[in-house]
Image (cartoon, rainbow, N blue to C red; front, top):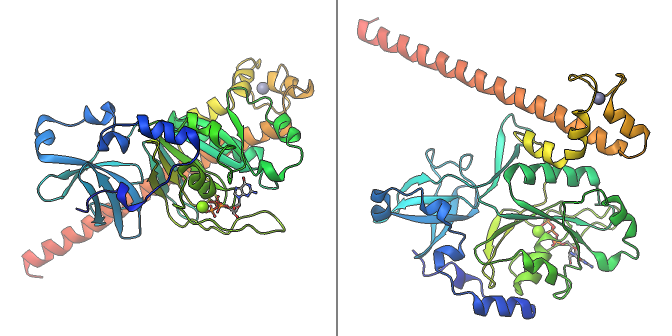
Length: 372
Ligand SMILES: Nc1nc2c(ncn2[C@@H]2O[C@H](COP(=O)(O)OP(=O)(O)OP(=O)(O)O)[C@@H](O)[C@H]2O)c(=O)[nH]1
Ligand SMILES: [Mg+2]
Ligand SMILES: [Zn+2]
């Protein structure tokens, strides 16, 4: 095991807040990695003696980078330790003497999506406390995409903060802020991610032991924000295309970076697609206004199309409900339904296939023993 995960990435600290926070911050190495009593309580007496907890700090194609009290470690992925079942932020128990994988601890939050182009879900991150949903104040700004991220974050029980980046390049952000006026429960922070003082309000979230995920499209400045908050060049940053403000997918893998202030920041590649799955409650929370209107419709199975006594349509006609928002709510519900069915069919197909394999193997075995 190498000496320390932290020693690999020197940071100078950035701004007075960070310096103050780091001098106060004298927490144990495990707590600094996000260890909480929720995880401690899951260890049996036996495991307390025979196992060590380590956190997944990065996931690569064939191995995991882990960090724990004693330092860092890379673990090769095997069928029993597959990348589909583990994700960044997970806490693993390893054998104290042989570093053998014992089990993954129960997660206190999990992000997942439909894997693009595949009939399966893909884990994005686990054990995250807060999320900075980053959107830049240019062509990237898209309310429907922000609502999609919000549904994901609300489902997990994490705290969202909408970070509107590139404020320095936007002459008048009032139109964007006006569009967000109805999102009353959502903290919104405008930043120039290149500037230490400008990102200072975000330090409120960056508390010791807290894990904060940076989510948003490519080129919005997630890695830039990470670098400025840490005061070091921890992650590569890239340019964006002039014509449509889109990024070039500079960040290639998800990595958890411990900062001097004690928080851990999860940088991830911009996602081209965020297909939602298992976030019914998250959608209900992200669209609480529409869901509560729908409960006031005359018919309990109202589809909000042309039914009499429809409270949703009345609100639309009265101008208090935005049509785009309503269409996005419907779209996300449809998507959840389709993805749910797709996964159920895939599960049924997999089960039938494994039954077929078993029966073919049984027949082969019988033939072998009967000497056919
Ligand atoms: N002026 C200005 N430029 C910014 C800001 N944030 C990011 N940039 C620039 O935007 C470009 C993209 O930034 P990145 O941090 O690489 O974006 P990213 O979100 O990490 O992109 P991916 O890794 O591709 O997902 C870089 O050239 C940054 O310097 C900002 O607030 N203001
Ligand atoms: Mg990046
Ligand atoms: Zn209705």
